[in-house]
Length: 212
Image (cartoon, rainbow, N blue to C red; front, side):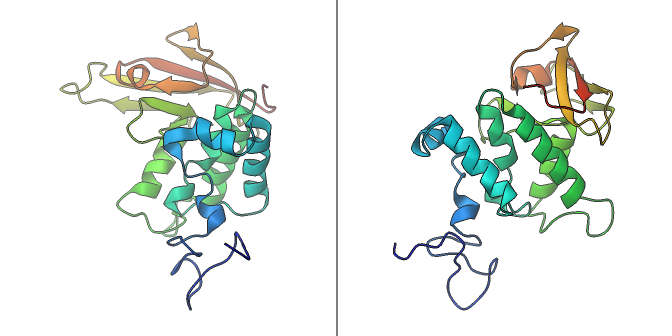
């Protein structure tokens, strides 16, 4: 499409009432990273891990991320896919939690769309998020609370209670230094579904600087 402008909108209305050419309620930037079912393929198409991280960081630095737009919601968690870049996810998620959400009547950044934005906040505040629908994998972010207890429906899940704790958690300590699950050090950069539904205790130790 020539000339191509990733910020362009079409028709006679401004975004979000209309989208850019070929898009609905968004432009090319808004939809660029929306391939949750094939993130490996997306990074390859963008030139590999380093080029992908640069493009994703440019998106946030350039103000193209839109916290009220569903295609954008998982973007902050995509840094987790590249080794040694999970700290970028932690930084962006904590910033979005602090900057785009609040306790007042305007506490959501946009239309909740049957709970979509609220669900993003709840997952992210607990410290993880399901980037790809239908997957058993949850990407790790930056937990907001000192302790959360999730009471699971015992008829569906056998665990009873999922407990999430943080140590040294504050506005100045958004970066994960280590993770313990039932007292055992955890090395992966994601959580799986079974970890969350079998009543385990997850402890995040936080700090002021990224652990790369």
